[in-house]
Length: 485
Image (cartoon, rainbow, N blue to C red; front, side, top):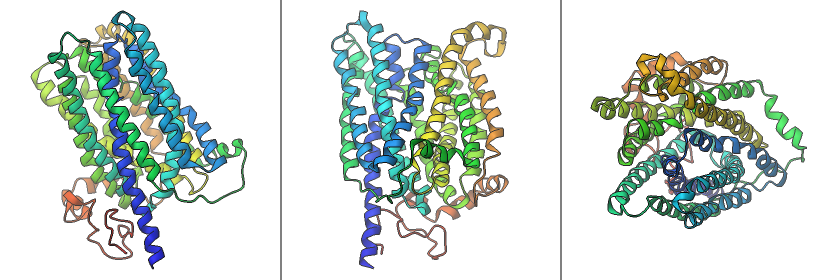
């Protein structure tokens, strides 16, 4: 009993450390990405095409996961690979800060090009680390609490997003007003410096996180390692959907912030507040979708959330600089978007966890990230090229003639709709029919029953259902319950 308890507590300890690591890494990721990287690029004089290129880099960099997957399977050192490449990736941001001390304002175009190259290097290194981390987590997180754990983890990251986004946006506006004689590039350098500190704090927690022992298997060739996932029919169907969906989503996703900054003339603080409203909705959604996925499956949630996410870009067509639009319509779009995207993102990753075998699974994560990434990158670049002509073409469409970005939003909605037909073909063992999930979603009472009598602390207390046969009963949950044996 004692030995078994120690094994359980070791896993719970690892899950707690993963949350600390995720919180630190999320601060780094938000300050070097989110609204801050495109805003920094615009400050350096970036064009819409360059914004599209920046947005596409993480997706094209996913190709490096092929190499990372091969190293994981060959050397069976997931933790070592994750820590090494995370350190190199985050350290590369030091060059962006140091080079910013060298270039003058007249040299911003050259500085921007170097920033793009360093960001590309950062994401290439991060892709190798990412596939090792996914494989590491797939064996660390018990299957029966996967939805709840990642719901908890992502909820905490949502809180981090709220704090960092609003604080960072306020700091940028404060710096511009307090030091008008100093280039605002310095305010971004300060944010990036803070980000690096938290990035390496995340590495500290990664080193403390335990790694489940991998079963040593016969070494296979690189060809066999990467061929096995593609032989699974259901996995291939999911990849086909992901390719079409990622292209359609990223055709427009990099340009919402550009649209708000350039066409609507919104200040950083307001954009930060809007991002926070989305993060709060994401936080709420994670708490709900995590429980739903554990009990009802991932496929029905994917379909429902994808349908709503398909409709959202269409409503951006009706936004403008009016008070109603800025303070009602756009915040509502951020709230609804944050809620549905939290469900989609959580369940799409969980689908891969379910499809991948316990061992030799890194190739599944690599292919999913790579195909997603290539499609997303092509979508972002295509959207950037499209934006160069959209202002001309939109003059023939009176409803959206005030902004070329609205034509991009409309096109994205159409592309997303087409991809939904592929999602219908994906299957999940034990998943609830979509119609039944919709009926459950319409009943708030069922939501409360499913999540227990303490919804505000649902992640920190045991389930009300104590039956051993309950799908919610687990020795690993809650992860902070140190006395549970």
